[in-house]
Every structure is written in C-alpha cells, then in structure tokens.
Amino acid sequence: MAKAFASQGDMSEKNISFTEIGRDLWAFTAEGDPNTGVIIGDDSVMIIEAQATPRLANKVIEKVREVTDKPITHLALTHYHAVRVLGAAAYNAPNIIMSEKARSMVVERGAEDRESEFMRFPRLFQGYDTVEQIPPLTWPTTTFNDRMSVYLGNRRVDLMFLGRAHTAGDIVIYVPDENVMFTGDIVEYHSACYCGDGHFHDWPGTLEEIRAWDVDAIAPGRGDALVGKEMVNAALDATSDFVTSTYRPVAQVAMRGGSLKEAWDAARAECDPKFSDYAIYEHCLPFNVARAYDEARDIDTPRIWTAQRDKEMWEALQG
Image (tube, rainbow, N blue to C red; front, side, top):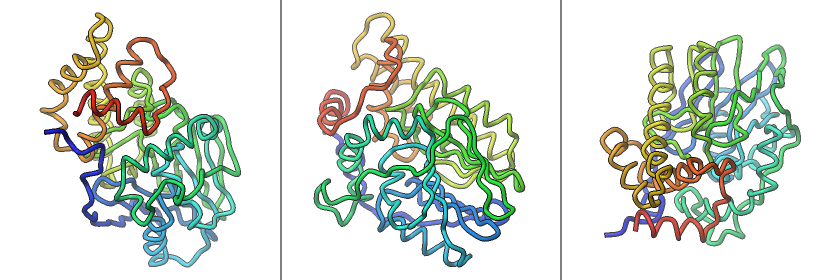
C-alpha cells in the first residue's frame, strides 16, 4: 500500500513546550514540528524562525507574552524554507535578518518551495485552501555573509555562517552571555534531517564547527531543547550519524552506476534500523535519497524541488 505523500497523513495537533534554556532564552517546540527560538534582551526581543503561517506564529507570540511585554524588534531566519519563514507578518518586526546566501535562495527557488511545502505539510497550513492564499515570500531587511552582531540593549547576539549543511545558507545564532546557540535545522533531536536541499559532504564538518563552541544548550531545528553539554553532544553525534548513514549507502550505489531505486533500498537497509522512529522520517527519506544520489554524481547545487517533481519522486520511491 502506498504511503500518504510527505506529511499529508499527519493531521494530529502537537503538544507545545516552551522551555527556558538560558536566562531569558526560550525554545518553542512541538513534537517534531519546526521550532522557534526567543531571545529577550534588555529592551526588546529577537525571534528565531517565524513558523509556517501567522496562525502558528501567534502561538509563539502567546508564549512570549507570558514571559515578557518587550517589543519584538528582530526576526532572524536561519534559512529560506517556507515552513520556517512565512509566518513573519505576525511579528511586525522591523528587522528581518538572513544570510546573503539564504536571500539569494529566496530569489532562486522561494516561490517553488512555497508551493512545494504547502503540498507537503497540510496541517501546518491549516486555514489555507490554495497556495495563493498563504503569505507571500519573506524578504530580509538585513543580510550578511560570515558574521554580524545585534545588540538588544546590552545583550549581544552573534549571527554566524559556519558552513553549508541543511542548505547552502544556514546560519546559527549565538548568545555569549549564556553560552547558548540556536542552530536551525543544522541540528535535530529525535527528528529526521531533511536533506533535500542539503550538502552531505559539508554537513558533518559544520556540526564539528558547532561542537567547537562547547555550548551549554542548543535549540535545534526540530525536537526537544538540548540542555547540558551531554545532551548537546549526543544530538550532534546523532545528527552526524543520520547524515552520513543516509549518504554513504546511496553514494556507493550511485558511483557504481546503480539506479535511484537501488540507492533507496540501500539507504533503507542502513537507516531504518536506527532512525525509523524519528519524527518525519518517512517524509524526509525520499527527498534525502534523491539529493544524496545527485551529490554523489557531483551535482553540487541541489536541484529545485517543485510540487510536480515532489510527486514524481515520491511515486518512484515511496509509491
């Protein structure tokens, strides 16, 4: 029996957690759904990741208003994916920050991603019957290449590009006074990594760049907040294992001229025993195998996913 496309079969409401991971630093999580970070400064607030729609963003705002009435002045977006950014309008933040590379990916593939993710995640886009009804593309007001700092009063926040991983433009956000980092989808916890726009060769090295900061807590892209160095390092190890376990068997098939379906079977044999209970695992695996197969054949830039390409690939592998 064919599996429901992507996450179309997952329509159950998720339980929300709002966890303080450092002084005035919060992680909004919801059982494997996209996470949001909150940094409360002396006089204002920075939000990290906007959520998929204003409806979902308002759930974050409700939690923020339980702990502070300071204005939300900054919205940092770790990458361009629609389920992370299309809720931006709800925050009314005058400053929206992305890496310059992430902005270029909005230009290049943002419209296609918006349509694709609308089809993949119907629960996240509840209340919208057609893709034309959902919020338009989110554009930054500020971009940077390698590093920039924002001051929320006296509280300094460092935004950095540490290397390609989940996308070519991922950034992390570091709060030095509490030694806490928000990593976006570079790091996941008991949730499958989505690698459809990823860079398998670079990703493990970027994880090691994060590890070198020796942080006390991380808010990952999906899954529970990681508090304490033991939990942080376990999540870094597991994320690296997921990425390499996906790529290695696929690459072995691709480089000997095997088919995408053979690569799929090899990836399942390696990954199912270790990761099949992870959130969105079945959703991610076909996209991950397709991207790994391309990268092993020296296609460095991920091909753009469209709603049509999504369905064709899903039928070929999960069908």
